[in-house]
Amino acid sequence: MAISFGLNSSKPLPSKKCVTYRSLKSINITSFMKDLGESKLCLDAPTQLDSLVSCYNNTLSSVLDRHAPLKRRIVTSRAMVPWYDEEIKLAKKERRKAERKWRTTKTTADFNKFKSLKNHCTQLMRKAKCSFFSDFVKENSNNQGTLFKAIKGMLVEKNAISFPGRNETALVNELGKYFVQKISNIHSEINNEISSNNDGHVDPPSDDNEEYPGDVSHFDAFEPLSEDDVRKLVVDSHKKSCYLDPVPTDFLVKCLDVLLPVITKIINISLETGHFPRDWKEAIILPILIKSGLESAFENLRPISNLAYISKLIERAVYNQTHDHILRCGFYPVLQSAYRRYHSTETALLKVLNDILLSMNSQRVTLLVLLDLSSAFGTIDHGILLERLRSKFGIRGTVLSWFSSYLSGRSQRAMLNGTLSDSSDLNFGVPQGSCLGPLLFILYASKLFDIINNHSPDLHGFADDTQLYVSFKPDYPCDQCEAISVMESCVNDLRKWMIQDKLKLNDGKTELLIIGSKQQLQKLNPCHVRVGNADVLPVP
Image (tube, rainbow, N blue to C red; front, side, top):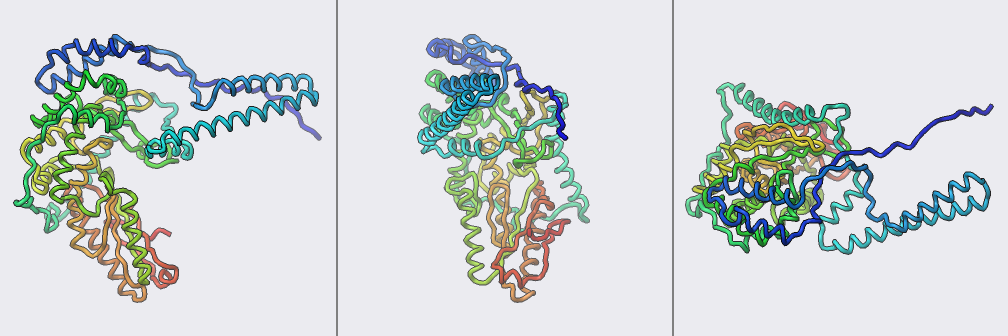
């Protein structure tokens, strides 16, 4: 018996949203640069740094508003299809026309015509898409970053952060407080762990008070930058814009001839006085999912700091000179990859994998422990960091004052779907997403390598991830027990140092791998490694 029914349905309407924009293409660049050149910023700029930065922001915002005022418009949200052209549009129009006629007449001739036009549309779209990406790859053959971003966009599913049914203002304020409170909670946990010890403190490792070698020159003053130096900084930089920028970065670059003396002056005053501009100490936090596929929950979000463009140029100038000092004195940990030229994921993988394969070739098994830190960049203690820069890396005088100014008085505001949270003060950490953040973390965590060097396990660091590994012969149970013992002893000393330096080892996310040939692995007894309060079992 046949069952039939009627169903009323309609195609969902595309969502609409209100957007604000500026008609930058309509700006006469010559007139814009003329107005900038006649402004107070270029003719009679303040000499005090904070006043100069305020004048810079206000002047550029004012001139931009005059030439391209903000406008609002209701737009329909549609997926971007860059290869869609007029030929495809007309072909689809003819296809729909043929389909309507066939559904009316039901004749074979009309069906065949509709089918032919449908196949023609499909061929056109495939050809246009293939041609678009082929041309894109050719044009960017020397730009690995652009190619990687494009291919990732095609292959990896985009995970939009969504909290349906929530008031956006209340939600983003809650999110902003969550990021700050998370760090405060970690520090409270560490302080409680220190207090719970019988003597009320954690003893530092024996080499923790190592002083800067006296025969190596100090770094106590920055070299001023010429306009050519600053121009190179701009040319080499990523041209990303931030909500805090008074004008879009790509437009600023077009006006560089007029603004270059002002930007150079801002950077040099900052370097000379050891002061970081107050207006650029605030970051806009754009949260991203820690891993693709996770649900939208606060604990699954990573805070990425978006900073004003010129502030990042100052950071880059400081980074270059600090990096040169650290490199010249040989202070970088040899086995620390990430954020350094010629020290990447490739070098980290090659080192660890090569050691493991050599051990396997010697009929040995490798015990590999992957340590994980909780909010590593966010928990850095400023006092400890500044003292380490002074005592271990010879950073003194104006340079140390600059870092102190850079770290103090910082704040952040979270942004979600265009809505900003209230401002929150930051008492710990370095901005994740800044130029200096990674360098400062490497210097802060450099004691980790000193501690591990006093133990048997080999190591390799990549950013805030640390790999410890030790190899042993599986033929004798005592060798396995000794390998586990030396690993636990090393991890225990690391935990003591981390507690002292206000870093939190995430016991639950630490992983253990046992690597070897199938024949050698069969000789092992079941085992685990004790990390803090957790027994870490081998990953299957």
